[in-house]
Amino acid sequence: MTTAKADPTGVEQGDADDRRGWHFNSLLVLTLLLLLGFQLQGPIRQALSAPAMQNWMTVFVAVVVQALPFLVFGVLLSALLAVFVPASFFARALPKRPALAVPVAGLAGVVLPGCECASVPVAGALVRRGVTPAAALAFLLSAPAINPIVLTATAVAFPGDPEMVLARFAASLLVACVMGWLWHRLGRPGWLRPPAHPSFEGAGRGAAFWGSVRHDVMHAGGFLVVGAMAAATLKAVVPAGWLHTAAGNPVVSVLTLGILAVLLSICSEADAFVAASLSQFSLTARLAFLVVGPMIDLKLFGMQAATFGRGFAMRFAPVTFALAVLTSALAGTVLL
Image (cartoon, rainbow, N blue to C red; front, top):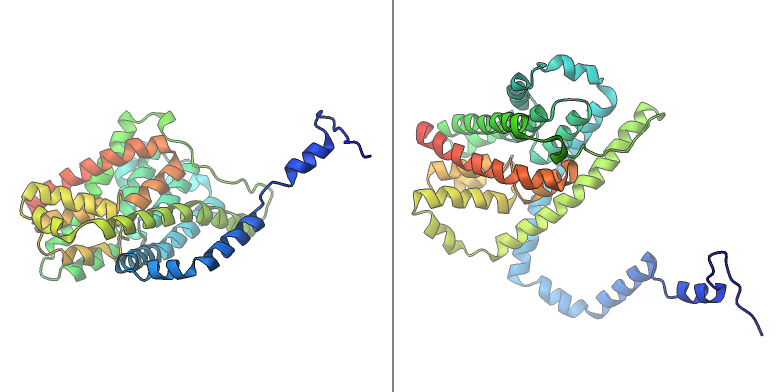
């Protein structure tokens, strides 16, 4: 007859072994999922072939494929800033007064091609390198909307309305600067969590660079996928007839396309062509689509929350949306 041995914690060894035998591990879960998928392959194949599911997968893949290269570009740039650029560089490049640093950082977006997915990790790197958060946030909002690639795409998408380029540039830069100034005046240190980042102290520059890249890709990529899934779901379920009804009211049309920009989560390098296709809406409403989208959408909200904290995103996103819609309506009235 065998007796159970007791470990130092007071739990008998035999009981611990029995309980340990019921634990699931990742290999067992994967095997069970594969067996379940094999047994249900007929219903799964039928569900995936449905038109609604085909539309969902098309939108999901399109959002991810559009955004992923620019996300990688932003991660590489973020790693370069973190590893190879000394912190003193930013102190010299930006004015010491935050009120002046905000517009300078906003205008810096003109020279850095990229989309909103790239701007989030870069803004996080700027904050880690000691840049005042107000200036980093101004860059985060302006860079995806006023860089040369986006402005060129806007000119190509609206060949008969060149004023759309000026309106997009002016409205986007104004929103970015005002949000930076608002954060400087009203923001609290506790609202913005310092961007977390692994420490590579003691490692060579090459190891630190690739370690930073791996961390940021895994960190931001997951939120990109979740945002793309949400955008695809909303795109598949919103009836197209609703858009035609909303286009008839000037106020509702601006608000509708602002909300649509949030839901669709389209990369800023491609959003001008989508806006141009919404010809039933006024130019002012389509300007709201172009200004709101690069600043706040579903995937951006998740990425901003992951980088700066959920409390930050819950405060920053609604104010940015409201200011972007109002500024678009004003710029459209004056410039279009």
